[in-house]
Length: 327
Image (cartoon, rainbow, N blue to C red; front, side, top):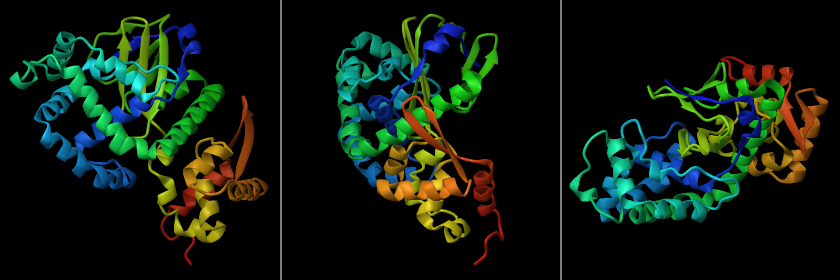
């Protein structure tokens, strides 16, 4: 397994950030895999996979670059620059475009764990990669970015609240499969058999993405990132999924949808963004759920967060059981 040695001060300074570039690269990984983890990803693939494959068919070098760059168990490092808080897609992409061609080829050989195909032994690989990623951004991510950004922000709020409640160990254990706090300042970042890295004193960020994927990246010994899939209830495009029929009959479909989402703490703004409901409607649903004791609210910094109570959890869980709430 791969793990990092992280002292308490480094963790205390670490933060969750939103990166449009990470969202684009995660989407590239999903397009390359061609199979979604849930219905929301499958809908997105049906809409965009044909265009992506047509793009690769018209550019065989880009097609080989995707296959080589995503590798077997390692991603070519020049494709995953470590995100900075507040960077635009174009600003992060500039790091890819500025990569040294010889170093890019070396990274591809590492990802392939073998020799580089002759078609990729060229000096324009960084520019080719930038063009490919720009296509993914323009055609498959930017049309949805406003909503995705709010979903990612909701995840950041929820993870930050989790840290405040249960400490970093609980938050790190739940990021994605393969991550967990081992104790003794050791943070397991994946299941690969790689040498441990001492990152105490470095800049460490945690970056959510909506596709069900993740990776780690670093720049020298100064900056590290862990990219992870955001909470499932958010990523699965809940607003387009039906709520359990019995729960909808009991509370009303829209109100039940809000209750289901509140398995993770969310603000009113995030609920509006994720559900597509109006602010007034979300506010009324929250008031009813609060009065019924199904959700609770608390302040986290400048945000007011809502989350299901134990009673709310019981109601949602019961609605998924067979023979419950028959009409």
